[in-house]
Structures are given as structure tokens and as C-alpha cells.
Image (cartoon, rainbow, N blue to C red; front, side, top):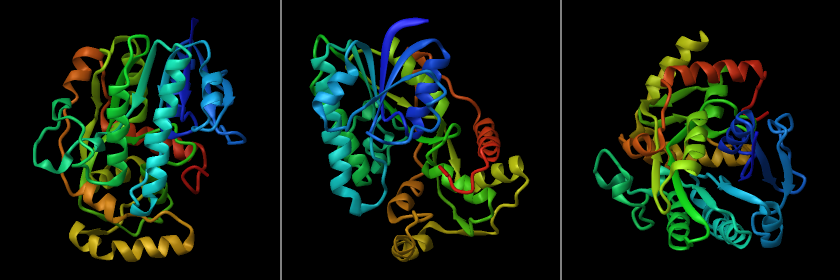
Length: 334
């Protein structure tokens, strides 16, 4: 049993849950921070200690981090909708500042910050993207990426001798466990329940959430202070994902593949209809911009310095299909 204390923010999210479970499974002493009164599905059976605090509660965060040697800051808001601009800044930028202040105040040895590949200038036509391209809030695709870039720059500039900081930037997360329902998880569940009427012909880099969790733990031990690590997987086209889902589930893929350009024309309507129904849209103008880029990512630095590894995407898809079916979900996260 590791006697040192690891604290995880954002523990009820997709990556946070995978991280807490992996830390506990490997004998770490873990405390996770959750919003007061929030559900902690997927964490109650781990043996981890729960602490409650809002992300902007300096005193509450400091109390929850007391005695910790490592803080994994996985809390954040993921949104590809432009109207969420203010909330994205409040959570991703201001919330990160507060969390880091609390970690420094309580004498945490290492602060592992979860960024995003979308903090990088993905539309610059440079491929593959590496850490040397740098994060740039003025050249991100979406507001989400801009706020993640701003948060990363703050973390790196605020690094102190007492609290070392390491930044890890995953690509598109996929795979189990996914109790709350990630964006990709919702697509898979809708596919399994034959509620996906069509798909687009773009693609993105996807990585197993469990591999990213392992990468974060490795970064807490071997990451160079003040460094950024890309934690990517492999590029997968949306048609390729549909094919793998069909092969692993036995459910036929939708027959209609919509060109990204055509989907963009209908995206505002799709967003409006979803808003009226109280559901998240299958695609947004933002998500279509991302999947149309065809970006290649290079995780060589993480592989060389952290020992970062990733499993085949087919294995991830197979595990995801089995997990959602085992948990009898009719809605991702439900």
C-alpha cells in the first residue's frame, strides 16, 4: 500500500473516475474531491476517501488537499458549444488557478494538470503535432481549446520550487468506465440502441481513457517539472469507428454517411432542435470543425520519458461495447 496521499479533482468525470479506480487498484491512498451533494457513481466501491468542495472554494480545496503529495487536476468543462464561453472560462481557467493556489498553499509536491490536445494550434497545417508546437490560446479551433491553453500557460508560469507542475494533454477519450456519459460514450450507446441515424466522414485521434489514467500516474513519478506531454492514441475515422462498432457489437451501422460540408450547413438547426428537446446534439459546428482536420499527433516524448503505452483501438471499442451492455445503459451516463 502506497502511504502517500493522492488527491483527484474532477473525479466523477470520465477520466477522473478511471484515474481514481486505477490508483486504488494499484494500492494508492486516494482522496477525491466532489461537488457537495453530487453523485459519485463508479467511485463508492473503490475505498477512496471523498471530500466535498466547489472548484472555486479556496478554503474547501485546501482542506481537501491537506496532507497530499500529489494532486491530479482533472476537473474541467468540455463543451463544443459556443454559447458556453463564460462557463468554460470560469471552470477551466479560474477553477485551475484556484486549484493550483490550494495545492501550493498546502505544500503539495507535484501538481499534475490535465490539459487537452485542443490547446495546440491544430489548424496550422503542421503534422504531426508535438509538444514543440506549443499551446497557443490565439490559434485554437474552439473556445474550449482556448480556455485549456490559458489554463496550461497559467500552470506553467505559476510553477514554484516547492510544488512541481507537469501538464498532460490527452486526445479524444474513449472507453470504460464511463458512468456519467462522455461525448464518445453517448455516440456508442446511441449506436448500440440503433438511435444513430447517420454519421459524418471526418475523424480524430482517440485514446483509451485507461491508458491516459496510467499516463497521468507515470507523469506524477517521472514527468519532468514544467513539461507538457501529449497523451494521444491513434487516428480513427468516423466511418472506421462505425465499422469497428458493427464488428464488435453485431449491430449494423447506419447506412447514411454525411459529408462534413453538408453536415455543417445543418449544424445550427441540429443544435437548435437538441436545445428544445433538452438533449445534446449529435454534432455541433464546433465538433465538425475538429473532425474535419485530419490531425496527426505524436506522443513520442511521453513514450520515451514516461513509458506511456496505448492499446489497440479495436480492443478499446470491444471493451466499451461490453461495458455499456453490462451496465444496461439506455443513455450514456444513465
